[in-house]
Image (cartoon, rainbow, N blue to C red; front, side, top):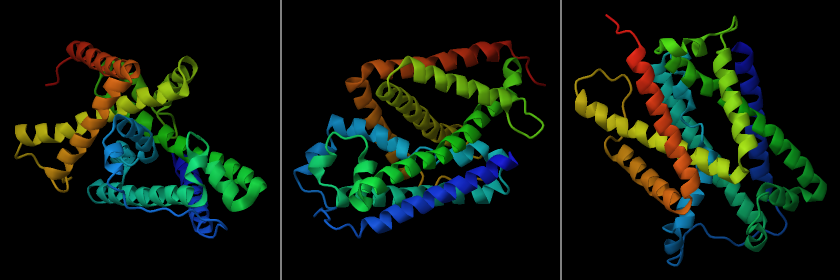
Length: 294
């Protein structure tokens, strides 16, 4: 765990430095594009279209991980203070970086060249640094993804570990090694990731996982309303800022995105629903076999 912490800090710091350099040098490109940040009246139709709603799944991945520190709340010092700070500052900083780097993509490359392209980062880097510099920057961007993989490998299995601690039948998934890492939970996550990689296309995996994550996130936020209603006097060390407006806006936007995913991408959405349903069924089966605590 200690080594993973240092590794994560090193590669995350390197990625932030890379993004900052990319953004700053992008403003000095020789032939900048004339762009505006204010949407026109004709853009409003596109912003409420099915295509825009589905594209938010890919935007969702850019911000995925903003809530990951809550997965390891039990290992955070003074979580009642540090966890909200982590969530707020992390989400704000990622939003700033995301918007600025997308601005640079549009600022450095004509829209006609970006249309239909996947490697927009390479096109922008080529415009800023030239052909060789663009290729080198692409390699650095790939290396920067290591920190994203590392963070998900660290926090994802903690969810499985915590769930398994409450289920005697799955207690083996909560087992840690001598250095504090949940070994079997990490192996399980790796097996699931490899299975998805080998059995579906990249776009299908993105849609399926994006739908499932969006559904889980919506259910979690909906749980805030349920908990407030059922247990109004429960002690709450963590407060939901802007309640009930902020969670209501969250559910409205996510519901809009999930609805269009079901309509436009029914097959991955159905698999996502089946995944959630199978998890609920497994929980019900295991819960009924667990001995009641006195």
